[in-house]
Amino acid sequence: MIQVKDLSFNYGSKKVLKNISMELKGGNIYGLLGENGVGKTTLLTLLCGLKKPLTGTIDTDGRNPFDRQPSLLAEQFYLPDEVSPVRYKAIDFGRENGALWPRFDFNKYLAILTEFEVDSIQRMDSMSAGQLKKTWIAFALACNARHYFMDEPTNGLDIPSKSQFRKAIMKYTCEDSAIVISTHQVRDLEEIIDPIIILDKEDVLLNASLETITRKLFFDYGNQIHADALYLEHTPSGAIQVYPNSTGEESKVNLEALFNAVHSHKDIIKALFA
Amino acid sequence: MKSEVFNGSRFWTYFKYDLMQMWRNHVKAAILIGFSGLILYVLGISFNALVDKVWQAPNFTARAVVFMIAVFALELYQTRTYGYLTNRRRGAAWLMVPASGFEKWLSMMVMTLLVIPVAFLFTYTAIDGILSLADPTYGPMLLGSFKGALQKVSVALAQANAEYSTTWTLGLFIVPMIASYLLNFLYFLLCGICFRRNKILWAFLIMFGASILLSMGMTAFGLKTNYDVDDLCSAEIQLRAILNWTSAITFAISACLAGGIYYRIKTLKH
Image 1: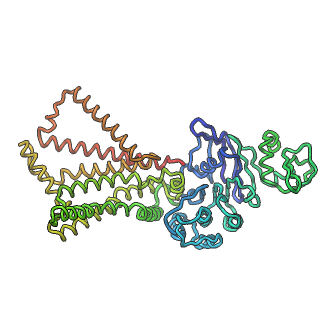
Image 2: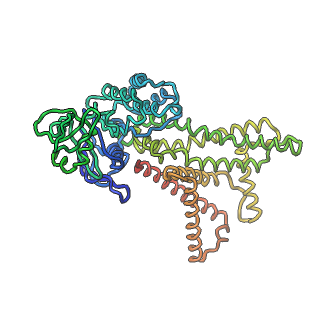
Image 3: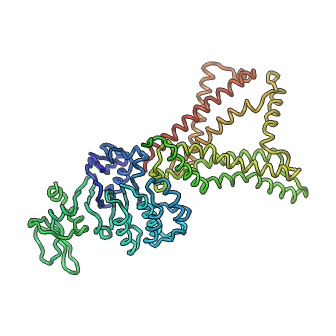
């Protein structure tokens, strides 16, 4: 489990994260959402130990990620938004780099590459951005880590690849893995992410499971307009509205509508989920 | 339970990986720099054949100068070997590799101070040796002549000042040379992993700044103590002492640089 307590981080005089606290439990795929520049990547890099918190603590299974202890590094994987094109074949990349991760499964790596339709004998610096990203994703999943921190993993992937990515995440990660995925492409991932974390400037607006969200909010896809809607968007087939769930009725969460509702009514949402 | 600081099998796994990366990216460059002697030879032979119509290899001085330039180029190259650590993507990937900071540092030291210089020196010496055997106009091997060159310096010093003996040997110079080699390689390595851009420019700027400060300090010391510079060279024993002190200080600075590299690895953020 990852425990974040009163975490703050600045870039010089610019505050990015302020007194953030949260718990990330194994067995969940967290969707980390937020506008540009609110600190999603910063939070991910803090969680994996690439940055040192200004104040507060991060505790990953009893260890401080910034200590970068080999035992913790072997249990986690950080996949950045932009990955490096190395100057050798994907198969050699897996063989050489995989040796460093104690639980790396080379056959699994090849299997995922095959599912992703990536040619394992192609040099990685001659791959397209999407193929390169898929090679790194295959490598990450083959490491059999317990904690994954993925920054915009579906950026650069074509439509079939996004589906392959979702399937691979569900198929190839351990049941007790805590996966944090930062994304703007919520539609790509809304079938797999749960709980949802919405970051705002210096703050966490929402950190709740889909079950909690549907208990507290109702997503109405009908044509009848509600006066107390926190968010309303007209669509070709009608409208999407989000309003407090007063009846306890279940509904399907629309992540874009949720995100917009949370952003336009921050105080109401925080009070609702407090 | 494995130690979080050093574990033999983990280090060996990481070292093999690092060696492979070095081979792919930098050892080849060191070998290429090692070919500078051959390049000089080809150019020298061509020039002499075209201009003077004779088959004549470059003289010893030219070869020695090119060797010094090649060593200097190799030193500067240390800003590149691990320079990628300051790159956000590659540096982050390196930091996330499951090995301890100490293991990564140790491997870095072996690569910088052994693998790359040995690759260069082996290539240079091998080519030098082959040319020396194959071409009678080439003369003796450069490194083989090193001791002789030092003895010539000793004789020249003795002729200039009777208090110097001509018994100076390679042993007297080898320690300061090793100290200087360590200092230079570690200095450029540290600059490579500290500065994100213009690594060589920053390295030189700091070096010039340090030289100016050192000169000012020594001048101030001389003025304050009214020390006569000639006294420094008045006897061989004093010069030996100066060399020993210089080496000791250089080793101490090198140790500080190695410590600085370790600190940089431990505190590097992306």
